[in-house]
Amino acid sequence: MENTFQKDLKIGHEVELQVLEMVRKKYPEAYQFEGYCKEGDIYIPEPHDKWIEVKADFMSQKTGNIVVEVEFNGKPSALSTTKAYRWVFFTGNKYIITTPNRLRRMIEDYGLKPATFTGRGDSCPKQAYLVKQPLIEKTAIKVIDL
Figure 1: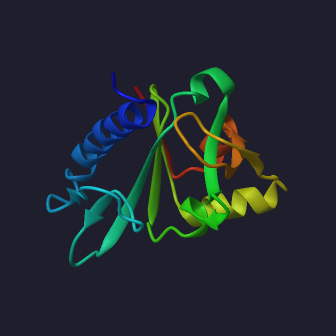
Figure 2: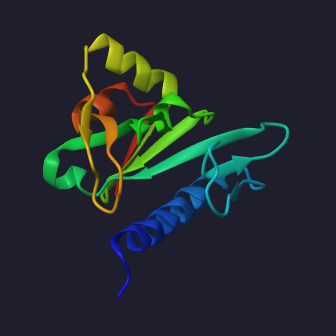
C-alpha cells in the first residue's frame, strides 16, 4: 500500500503538470523539474530564468485555510527560502496565482501569526500560516475557477 507521503507526492506531481500546461501557453520552453528542487517546481528558461512553485492544498476545501509554510523541522523553508517568482495554489476547484512578495506583504499587513503542527505524512513539525482562502484570493494576481 502506498504511504501518505508517496500518495501526496504523486498528486503534487500531477498538479504541477496541470500548471505546466497553462504556463506553456505563454512560455513553450518551460518544463517541470524532476525531483526535489529548492528553487521551484516549474522552470522557465532563458530569457526569463524564472521558477514557479506549485502547492496543492485540497484540505482548504474543508478548512477554508491555505497553508503557507515558512519552517520545517526547525529550518527555514518554503516562503522563507523560495527563489520562485510565482506561487500557484491549487485547491481542487481553483488555481490561485500570487507572488512570494504578495504573500509576505499580506502576512505583515494582516498581522498573521504562524501555527506549529505536523502535517499529514510529515515526520517533523512545520511552522506555517493558515491563511483564510478569501484573503489569499483578494491579494492574488489571478484566481482561476474550475
